[in-house]
Length: 302
Ligand code: FAD
Image 1 (cartoon, rainbow, N blue to C red):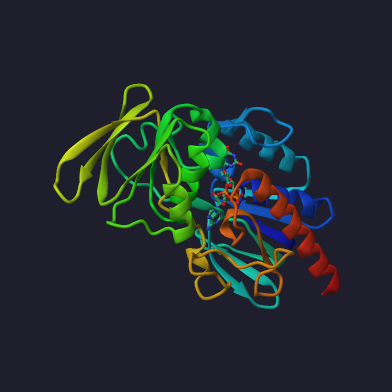
Image 2 (cartoon, rainbow, N blue to C red):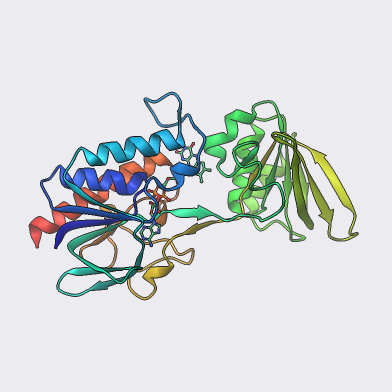
C-alpha cells in the first residue's frame, strides 16, 4: 500500500505529491488528466515569480517536477469510489483498487459552461471565466459578465475598476447576488445591468467582437459590441464520486480544516475541490503542500 495516495493531478495534487515524497513517504498520484485546469489556460500572469507562462507549459513543468521524485504516477486513472477500511481504498474506473494509509483528494473543479455558439470557439480569445486571471487583459475595453449571482456580481465590480464598461446579463428577472453587492454594483458609473435576458451567441471573427441576447419579455434579439465575455454561472467541484463518504457543503465542495483534513480520518483534500473561498493556481499549490504536511502529521501519530 501507499503511505499517501493523491487523487487528482492538477497544481494541488502535484504539490501534495512532491511534499509527501520529500518526507520519504511511499507516494502515488492517480489523475484523470495530469495538469488539470491549467491545461485549458492560455496566458498565466499571476503565478508569482513567473511573469508569464502558458498553461500547457506549466502543466509540463508540474509533471517534470513530480518526476524528480520516486512518485508512482498513474495517469488517465479516474477514482470512482472511496472506502475507509483499515486502510483507505480508492477504486478506479477500471476496477483496480488502490490502498493507502492516507489519501489526499485534489480532483479540482470545472467552470459551468453556458453552451451557446461561440463559447468554445472563443475560449481564451475573449471568452473568460476568471476575473482575477484575465481581468487585466481587458483593460480599457468593453466586456460583459454573464451571471447575476454572487460570483458574477463580484466579477462585475472587480472588472469595472479595470475595463471601460461592464454589461451584466442575468437570465432571471432579478439578480441573485447579495443585496450589498448589488448596491455596490449599481453605484458604479460604468456598469449596465440587463435582467431577464438570454445569451444567444458570442460573436467574433478571430476573437470576440460581441454578444447577441434575447430580451425574454419581448423576444427581441439585440447585439452588444464587446471585446470580452466573462461567464460566471458556477464552478462545479469534481466530487460526485464521493457521495456518502466525505463530508461536502451544499456546493459539493469538500469541507476541510486548517490542515486540509476532512471528516474521515486519514482523508485530506486540497485545491479547487475544497471549500477554500478562492480558486487559483498558487492557492491550490499552497493547499496541496498544506494537506501533505497535515497527512504526514496524521501518519506519524497513527
Ligand atoms: P484542477 O486543476 O482542476 O485539477 C484536478 C485534477 O484532478 C486533474 O488532474 C483532473 O483530471 C483530476 N480529476 C478530476 N476528477 C478525478 C477523479 N475522479 N479521479 C482522478 N482524477 C480526477 N488560476 C490562476 O491562478 N491563474 C490563471 O491565470 C488561471 N486561469 C485559468 C483559466 C482557465 C480557463 C481555467 C479553467 C482556470 C484558470 N485558473 C487560473 C484556475 C486554476 O487553473 C485552478 O484554480 C487550479 O488549476 C486548481 O488546481 P487543482 O489542482 O485544485 O484542480
